[in-house]
Length: 91
Image 1 (tube, rainbow, N blue to C red):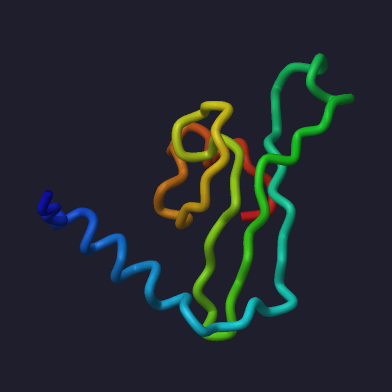
Image 2 (image 1 turned 90 degrees about the vertical axis):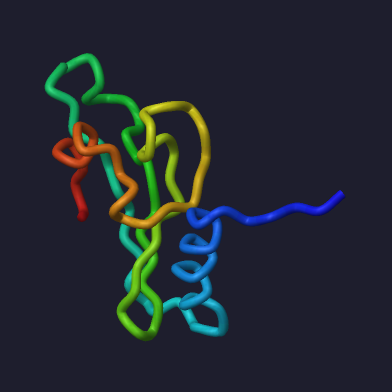
């Protein structure tokens, strides 16, 4: 079976290729979600780790930041859901 990559796959591969061979700097930030409800104040609100590599590029190991789900993903900042972005501390 022959698989072809669409333009989105190729673009993603190009973006992630810039991280290959780079070292993660000492700039690792814990991202927390701010909730307006007091019910969430006493529970863990950590939703991701923001990593910076030696050339200044950044990526996030996250928990649902791209679609507000319960899924783990590694994403770029540009992939954070806009509604969620306003609730994040640490960006």
